[in-house]
Image (cartoon, rainbow, N blue to C red; front, side):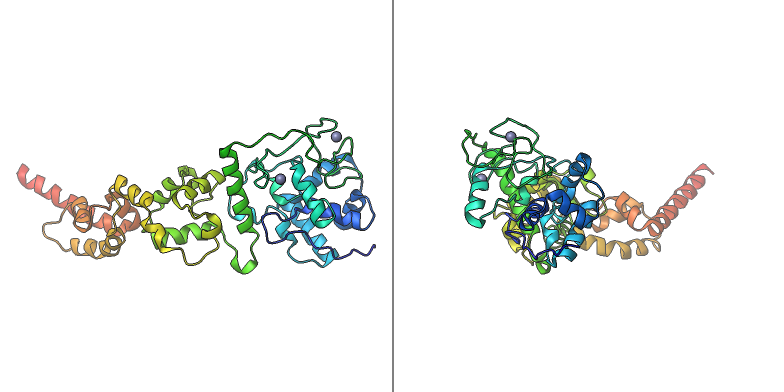
Length: 364
Ligand SMILES: [Zn+2]
Ligand SMILES: [Zn+2]
């Protein structure tokens, strides 16, 4: 067994942190071995085949194989925090679904700057996200083609692979020699939002944020538990509203940023949720448009049970709809039936029997 040096991943804790595949390449270089050989030593793969190289590219995605690699590498190198080099932590904040880049995308200028700064080429994790269309440092479109041989699908892993080299002609991808196209403002905005989420997802364990807890806290503390309002504000589809409230996509977060212009970086890691959010005109407008859910909504829910019980002793019995509207116009009868099925049904049963008796009396 070969002795593995404790090499630190670059830029951990920032939005520019290194991805796991890039780390593995640097680790191989530091030990003067082929990256395929290193993967075999660490992950116990048996052969050095083309198919295996293609499968390894998923080590950045935070899925099953990626976790196995992280564990194997962590125990071989003794380095903590390697899971931050995969997209697993990003997935706690944002749905990736099809947003993984299967091939290399790069910014030639960033590659050069990485060499200037660290004396070695590296790939940031964010380059593995399709959402990141524009380099937010240089405002140019991410390149996906080799400027020398024109290869369009640059492989992440290949025999003798190195960071920043084309998988066919093996030449250096940096240099910024090719004319780079500037990104459109909308693409830049998306990329900034992705970078903010990557930054938040790389925070220390203690400050870790998770979309689900953040949004449900926000809902409870600021929005009177009005999930529909939050969903509309984030322009999320009803399908995104499950038991876990919402699994936001990048577009949902971008819609959220329009409402809360301080940016996700300021908002997400901070507890408690800032008080100004609930008074935001966008949210108030939504309340007004809906017209149904007002501030007494929660109080109405607290009172409805007692009111239903009292209605059971009423003579003559009242219609369930009238009983509910006594408490608040913001409650619907069907929602009350869902929440208190037995009580509400008992009220309805009494009223129906009463009506039946009335009819019989009238018939006689
Ligand atoms: Zn760049
Ligand atoms: Zn090439």
